[in-house]
Image 1 (tube, one colour):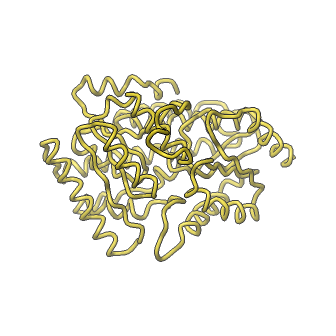
Image 2 (tube, rainbow, N blue to C red; image 1 turned 90 degrees about the vertical axis):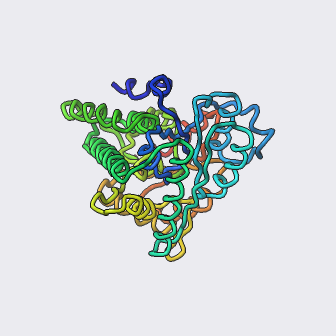
Image 3 (cartoon, rainbow, N blue to C red; image 1 turned 45 degrees about the vertical axis):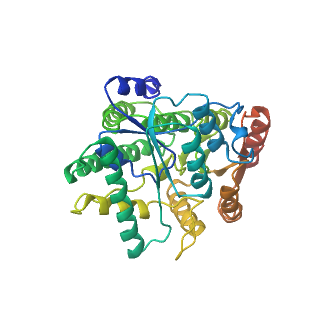
Length: 365
């Protein structure tokens, strides 16, 4: 069943059906607007681990995600894209937009301005930004995005988020009914499918999952840190004798742990409001409250419910932005639970990581 979610040929099927594909790079991208335009938003992951061409355009100390996705673009693996959308959600995204626009030729490109303050002024500003984005899509693709189109897309995406929340509950069982690596595969597949199709598949899968037996009982881990696009990372941790019962990555719970208010008459305003309030990213600063404080509060609330045996913080060897917050995370979370910090780089040095993970497991016994 998991393999059905991970069918890489589905994007080509969409193109054969006359759909146009828009690549995105951040969970703050308001996909509802792209979807309402009749387009297919696809979160780009980057599958290659051998960076050969990207270093001619970007420095080698950038995060592996930005290097890998750009490498894929340079070698033509994203030739299915009709366009892409970046956000000013962190420094790397802002600069990579210009590099992509210059070197990866597509029909449409757009940079969304994302405010970091959470107040009435920011909400009004972001609403205007999203209205401008909507007009840009309408003008370029000669479509009329009506309020009904937007509300229909909001309903589809709210159902998508609700179903993923339901899926995650099966990880909380003692023992869990689904592994963290399988959940990650499903999450990744959901990022590259039309959500209405994904919703039907995941609902059917959840109904079958309720009758499944639990997995072998193992020490339970809470995972936080950078987004993970490689199930191999989670499989490596679980193969060392752990169960990953929760992850608050931006392509994990923080991607669906909010809901857009369907009763607000102006759907663009509703989208702007909830995307501003969604669980914060470690690379986004706030003006009236610290992003690290919001992140710690979010994690602590879930630790109280899940009571894992330990916490794994995953870092990126090339992401200095994430590293700033992870120092504080390590210090504060270590006061609550045992913490293992894994700094990931590719290709994976599996034996080195396995030694660290197994040592952490031994320390818990």
